[in-house]
Image 1 (tube, rainbow, N blue to C red):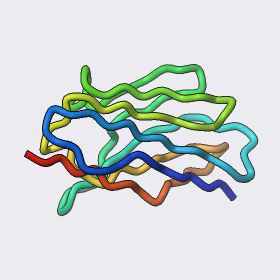
Image 2: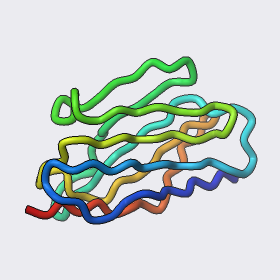
Image 3: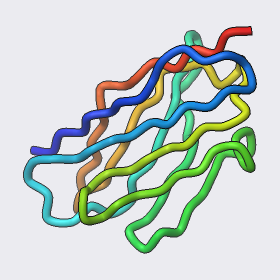
Image 4: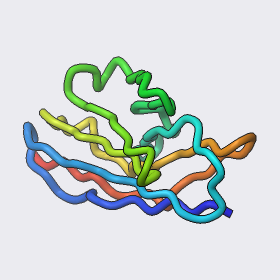
Length: 115
């Protein structure tokens, strides 16, 4: 079993910054891709950013240039630095990890952007 614990969400003003982190623990042999997804009320969960073990990244077009994903493989932790936040970035952010052939999700952390 793998547990993902997110932290760092909260309330921020438009144009502000937040940093999220997600730590994986449990029966981890090797974590492949890790990533961040988000889900706003009434909308489907969508990919925000992903990162491979080797550090290759991909981003949703809507966050390119504003968000940065990174990971510390030794700590089994993935981070998401969010800058220049917009109202449309408000959502519950979920961490996802692929371990072998299994996919695990965190419990989510709320990001609220106030204008």
